[in-house]
Amino acid sequence: MPANTSETLADLLQTLVDIPSETGQEAAISAFVHDRLQARGTGTCLRAGHSVVWRGPSRGRPLVVLAGHLDTVPANGNATARREDGKLFGLGATDMKGGDAVMLALVEALDPAALRFDLAAVFYEAEEGPLERNGLTRLLREMAWLREARLAVLLEPTDLRVELGCNGAMNAEVRVTGTSAHSARPWLGVNAIARAAPWLAEITQFPVTPVMLHGCEFRETLQVTTLQAGRAKNVVPDALVANLNYRFPPDRTLEDAERRLRALVPEAFEFRVVDRAAPGLACGDRPEVREFIDRFGLEVAGKQGWTDVAQFTAAGVPAFNFGPGIPELAHQVAEYCPIDNLEPAFTWLSAFLTEPGA
Image 1 (cartoon, one colour):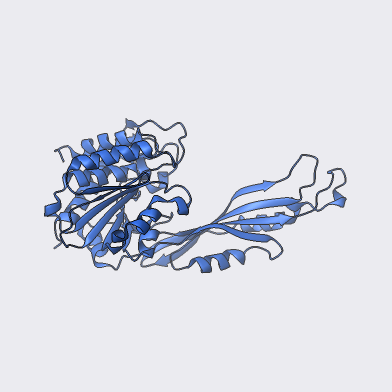
Image 2 (tube, rainbow, N blue to C red):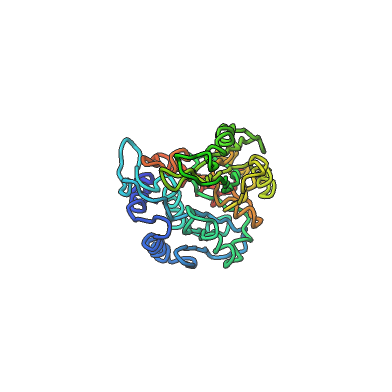
């Protein structure tokens, strides 16, 4: 990298932000990344759909995988990058094109022969959508060698902390039935909203519950995120459908989470899990993870949102989250990545990949 690494990384990030890549529309950014990696001239560039994988030369060393998703949530007046007060604003700047810029710069700058690990970089599509369409799901299935990695680093936004594991996620549909009637004669029907109201009043007060694992705090949360009822203004509603979004810590299986969630819903109400994603294991006790944390004196936390650390750890690959973006800004209109976070992320990962720790 040039002497002004921070500015070079900021320029690259701005370029990435200005390439539209909402989920399902990653063709342009995939082509950009592929062409840059091909121009690298060293290693092998692979594609699967709109996901791009660079695999460096294999020299029999342990494999480290850097990974980041290329897609963003839908734009909300923030599709174009801008810089202000040391911050680069724009859709995906923090989640997670800041991490993608660091990854791309590392592949372009590092000499594979000088690394202490074999290296691969995975830029994948469709992370912001349903898990079954997630590009990493396909890559782990089709490229079995990725599952043999010693370590995976997800460059998700962490504000230069190491965030271990990730919470699991589950969405469940609760359906409360009634009997329709004319609103002028409500005694002839059963109002589904009125029937559900006591339960809704209770479930919406579910407390945020801290859970400590491996010295990190994870928070159990439950939110009613959608609510649908009623067919007309003069009809007693005969159905109410609520979506429960449940986030649960890594010490619970999907089966544990479903039992926990079902117990919070009256037996008389219909209950159906519509999607689920297992939590990611906290791997703070693994030697390479511990080395990275201690070597650079990094703060450690649990990952509150779901990330693909879960897919790597389910495949038997230790993994952690580390990136320049700010996690609290993900999916916000005014999301930004601090430009000053880009160079440390690049420098620390470069040193970890090339120089043995003390």
